[in-house]
Length: 365
Image 1 (tube, rainbow, N blue to C red):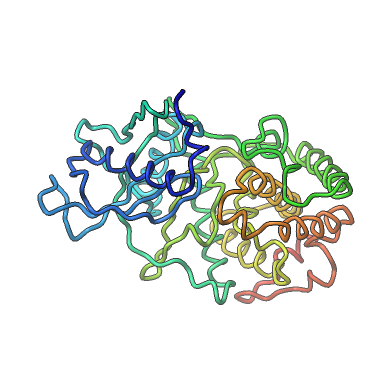
Image 2 (tube, rainbow, N blue to C red):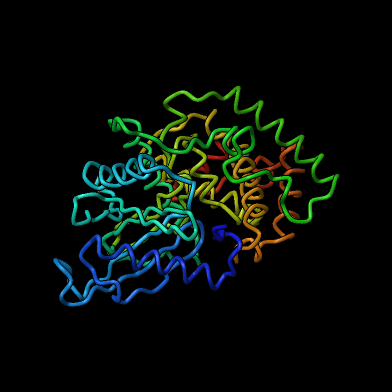
């Protein structure tokens, strides 16, 4: 019987993923013994590659980025769609994104087979783009820039001619909490009690009703990044660049705002962060008061989707670092949401002045 990747120890999994990365390199004319170092390991494994001086067509002083996909998450067409949108954003909208490098055969996607594990993994090689992650010591200005670039992505998505092979995940109610549950069931979150489950089931019911009433017209629902946090921005010389489109798919545009506050939804200054994001967003694209009024619902939708992710990825460092504390915070947010005090509490909505503009949140109430 073939060994299963999920049954391996963490160390053996890393060795296997490095093996996949190295076996993929010759497809781009890079020797397998090139310098390869792990940058991140979450859903995918991302490696920095430094080709040798004799690698065909590559500057040995310029690193490259190699992504090894998890199995069973995206199809080849879904990855082609991601790469096509990233290319179009840079070409059409001037938003700098990592660009995939064609292999020697012209394909952007290479497949590495591992018969001993009865698995195959997609791999892509990307150009390295310069930039630093935003300074998170003072969040208001970074959140303003984040809102601005998010609106630029949405504006482009609304008018982009999708390729005939278009395929991406759908982050609607069913994909987050309903029938499909792309990240698992939130009921598997750490430390949930029966009382917690009953509370969150009430929240889930309210979220579904409000989303149904809100609808999914093209002005509200389309192609989104779906993980557009500060961690996925790079900044250089005043220019904002966007990375990590792995979760990009169809969803409500304001789900990207909810993604922006992932894991920090319980901060005391959340209203100010949301307001800064909205001010940046509105500099590029309009929103209606009905859109702004849905922000608490989208944040709760995302929070419960993250609770599901933590439950289904309990072995990851991120899930371990959040643990029961994340469940406790979710419980507190749920109580506020059901009492209609989450982000609409009068004390929280005292006007926040940014660039001489009154708080968008306060104006929408």
